[in-house]
Image (cartoon, rainbow, N blue to C red; front, side, top):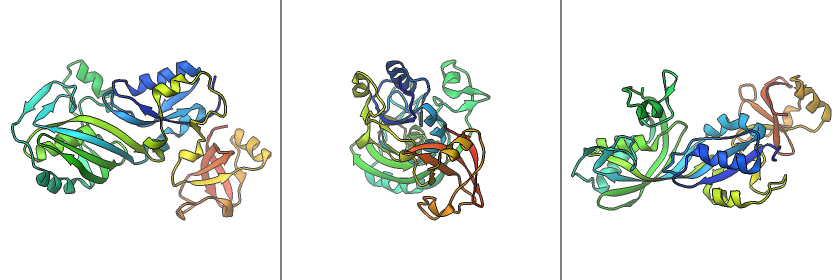
Length: 301
């Protein structure tokens, strides 16, 4: 049984849900607490950050990070799910040229308004959109503000175009395919989708689900489990050295820290940001500074 906290940089294969992927890990290694950041569709493959133990409390910080994808849009067909698995809704014989697509995608850089797909985890009056869709219920999803940092074409053929995108939290690549196609006076859907990166979780360092499940016995030093702090990017961090400080934090008490020893990657204002306290790579608390007094909000001991 794994009792430690940390991250696994999992490579999820196609044709399996994110939930099923982490559930198979949970059963195999008898993990009490496990979760993932940034759900991948069953048809999608790629990087899926897995949190173990108390690292599950840090999932929101990973979910906030930018994500990079490679995807292919097939032109001329719009489906109910905005991917290759859905029922065909509309068809068009018009197939856009590469130069037309290049001109249009410039308009998508930055903040845009986007309506998530009908088959998504967005909640409508407390119920997931994909469940309402499966029940053939009529419903509308409100547009949301999302961010694209970079978008470029990597390959183009007559009826398909491949892209690479770097985008922010809550972005749906399937919605982009649908909207871009309509913008180009045709229809389109995602025919392949791969996530290359979530913050510091990158494809190159990921472990395939099958390879992970082949490991006979998990142990404390297994090399595919990263420390909780190692995968958090651009944060204020402080290493705890005194046992008394750990003891006080475990009871939710404030402790004094030396502000000069705070690891500050980009000279962030200490007063307004969360400070992450860690020991031997594992985060023990998250809180705020009031002068040199650290006040804990979350305890991970």
